[in-house]
Amino acid sequence: MKKTALIIQHFLLPDEMAVLEKDFRVIRIWKERDPETTIQENKDNIVVVISSLLPVRRSLIEALPNLEIIANMAVGVDNVDLEAARERSIVVTNTPAVLTNDTADIGLSLVLALARRIVEGDMYVRVGKWQNGPLPLGVTLTGKKAGIVGLGRIGLAVAKRLAAFEMDVVYHGPNRKEDQPYEYYDDLEKMAGDVDFLILCCAGGPATENLVTYEVLEALGPDGFLVNIARGSVVNEEDLLMALSNKKIAGAGLDVYTNEPYVPSPLLTMDNVVVLPHLGSATYETRTEMGRLVLENIQAHFNGEPLLTAV
Ligand code: 8YV
Image (cartoon, rainbow, N blue to C red; front, side, top):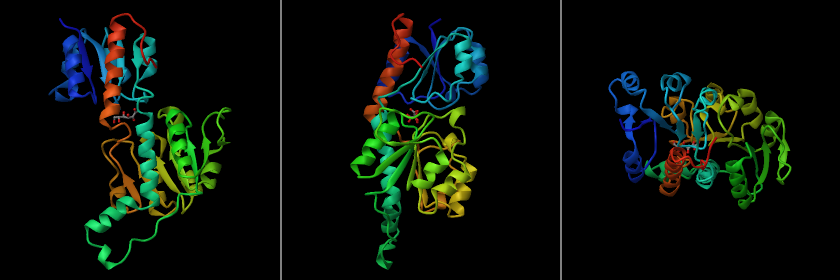
């Protein structure tokens, strides 16, 4: 029996899928009428699991006795039960670095869209409101302060872009980065109180779950904007909805949500909210590179070669 790759979710391009299918029998779990039974029937042959954002749970890992590698098509691995994988010495790989600039670009797009009412303005023209008068004024970016949560690869790329817009950059995270010129806050609420834009760029997972609470949003204040390009889990979504309804913040630009692809419906009626469908890495070039990493990690593993991007 050909070795089998179980795909939970992927963004591989057709050419890359074809490469995978040369070496593996591929099960696309969403196409199976009865996924549980398919997994049971193929459990001995499944050696690879591919996902992106959907969970790779302990129960799945434990159901697959010959699983060798989980190749996650994302830089984030908060969807993978790393502990369960480690216990079985199952290799986990991700796709870091190749998506840094594109994801940072989406962060900046959200900052611009909020400050200059770009999305609202587009709708204003389309529905014929311009003839009735101008759109309410936006806010200047030059000289404003942005607080980045998570000054990793993506956070730094966002900082670089904000600096080009002549904005002040400060950051919060678990540790001060001695090699960075930006001011560090160990207290998120304090930083939120000092900035105009709070931009979430950190990893998801238990360490950052519900980091942004009602109190943090209240501190950000009625002139402050929230931008999330990290994970939905970083923000308490109920608190965000409440803060927006109570006008505790000026607006929010969101690329990620707790229960993707479902977006809380109240957000859809708010003019001061920009909602994107998780576009961080969604360019042809970056998805090609992410797919290459997925395939090369799998190939390297089965050839006994060093992995390119092990977690
Ligand atoms: C998505 C991401 O996985 O890499 C990550 O962690 O969040 C993104 O690249 C990808 O866009 C699929 O939606």
